[in-house]
Amino acid sequence: MSERFFLTAPPAAGHAERVGDEARHLARVLRARVGDAIVVFDGRGTAWPAHVAALGRDRVTLDLGPPLAPAAPPLPLTLAVALPKGDRQKWMVEKLTELGCGRLVPLATSRGVAEATPAAVERLTRGTIEACKQCGRTTLLEIAPPATLAAALADRDPGMLAVVADPGGEPFGPLLTQHAGAVLALVGPEGGFTADELAAATGAGCRRVSLAPHILRVETAAIALAAAVASHMSRAD
Image (cartoon, one colour):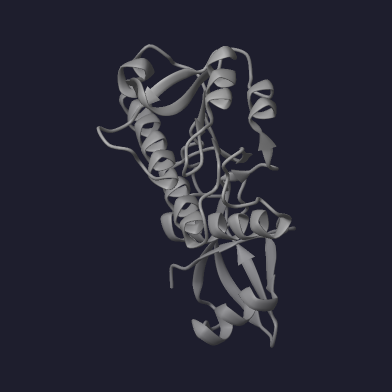
């Protein structure tokens, strides 16, 4: 068995426990047995090989081996995105996790169609945990509290390349080749940023960048930005 599980609490003295739904999934759905091997990770970059030591009705005890070799760190990319509707959010988070995006900020905009309620943020967090299990990532995609456009821009670190997705902008790829640091990328809602929002972004130093010859949906634009940064970082290595 090579299943991966997320640890909600750090291990202690080489042992960890899974309780509740995850324990039931391991014991009843996967039919784990004492001695079976799995992998657990803490969402902060560390993973351990583990063996099932004991099985209870709603609790599984694990014995952990030495930490595995560190995986690649997250991309130095913050995506501030006006969330799309429904299941498109889950699909976006899954792909951003696979691509290695570091941080996702749900963006509040004038034309936004989905509100980043606490329940929605919790669903996004669950989505990145599930995606990490599948893709082998050991650091969670950080789901930040929702922010306005002004707050997202004001919160960026000095030296960050700030861009806003815009069909009329300059190509993103060549711009990336001139930059070696972190990136903040803004993606508007389905109806696009308003003229005032776009002016505020460019006035704060954002470069307008295009990603494809056609108009992209919100989640497609976010994924295209992450894929471009991932490709750039790979070439830089």
